[in-house]
Image: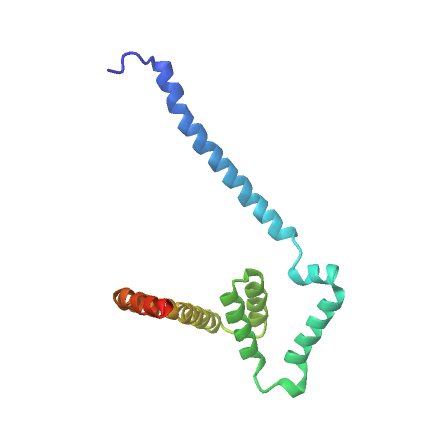
Length: 164
């Protein structure tokens, strides 16, 4: 059955998948190392903002000082502001902001448990937003069978109205 293949042909066909997978492994290895390189050398979003729009960067830093340092705006303690920042950054999907806020939180004595709980609240709230977003669609799906049943009657009624 396989007599027409030489052993060398079999070896050659066997090497193709291994060469392909080896190339994939090398590519992922290179990309992983490149990603580490980028993480070590890339500028933060604020550094880029300062470079391209210094007035906006200054405005953002002024807002930060107003919220975190001005005595008039201390009704919410800094700890809770940082936890809210972590939760918001997590819900919005900003890895860089989450890392930065977590570092600030750790520097001010916020525990790992508090940070984890803040991210769990963010996850819960994001789920709630998804539920709210699809609520009208789900209501439509529930109402669809009823609409399909009464649609012929509506078409007849509209048709009579248009003809008159």
